[in-house]
Amino acid sequence: MSEARLRTDLWVQAQVRICDLAVLPIVVRRRGDPDAGAVLLRLWRDRDLSLLLKRTTTTGGSFGWMVVGGRAEVDDPTAEAYIAREVGRDDDLWVVEIEDPRAQYQTDGPLVS
Image (cartoon, rainbow, N blue to C red; front, side, top):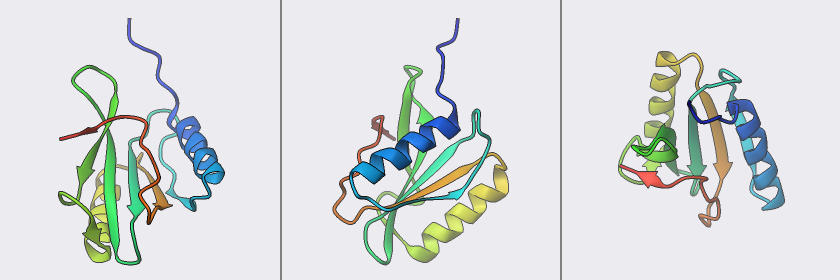
């Protein structure tokens, strides 16, 4: 029997609320499949640098986050190009952006490689 999963739209709504409580500006830039769409998270570190994370499943079957677009923060043109490629490949993709210059936002799963 498979483990019950939270719908993606509900997970995104929860992140909006978490960021609201932490006074972190958040924008749902693109809505994907409400039930099981993939999530690409863009954490704005400053005006020109972002950390891109994609939600993934770990070997244990739980959710984790993989750094994409590079090994660390990437510049704006690199981030935009990566997002455009991913959106072109996956119609169900959600893109969520959080202004996080002090690295306050905590993901709900571990960073995996």
